[in-house]
Amino acid sequence: DIQMTQSPSSLSASVGDRVTITCRASQSISSYLNWYQQKPGKAPKLLIYAASSLQSGVPSRFSGSGSGTDFTLTISSLQPEDFATYYCQQSYSTPCSFGQGTKLEIK
Amino acid sequence: QVQLVQSGAEVKKPGASVKVSCKASGYTFTSYGISWVRQAPGQGLEWMGWISAYNGNTNYAQKLQGRVTMTTDTSTSTAYMELRSLRSDDTAVYYCAREGAVQGSPFDYWGQGTLVTVSS
Image (cartoon, rainbow over all chains, first blue to last red):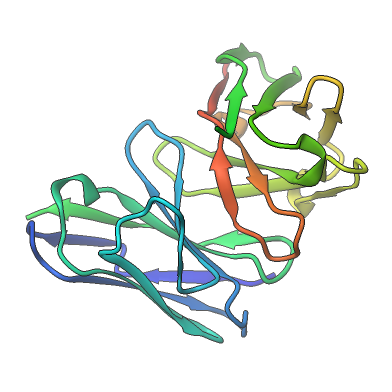
């Protein structure tokens, strides 16, 4: 099974900051990497699919990059509604697997 | 608009079974798959398995093999997940999520979640 490791596990930042979250796969997953945002008590929401494609309706301040084993999610200018937990997920092989999550908190 | 609406919260005793439903609307049900993902309190996301709404093919997480069954009813566009021999560590929010027919598709729509509490 493929293991996904996110870093950092938590992050404090301010409104307007540029933030980067990284995700590493235990083996190459090509570009089969997706990013989700989850707010407390809510279902996850798809932000980025296929490593760098922005899901419809997601603000353009979110972007993704990477291929192979190393990936990043970048938020160019944090907004108050962006404080949440972010998960990466590989959909390259079954079983799919998620990173452990990165909790983004207000500084 | 695409919606996945799940059944309500459940409280079960250890050893019992639970069956959670996920009613889809706003798209052609049989053109997609449904995955089930659970989240224990304060924990991350765990994939449980997948079912094709087209032909009923399934793929389950190894750790749940023998305890989980996923089915669909195409006449009502509803997916079901049954988990048997419940244990306290099965306490979690259970989500259904739509998955595209193409291999490697993401989970683009999610249900609202169903809290299953296992307690004596």
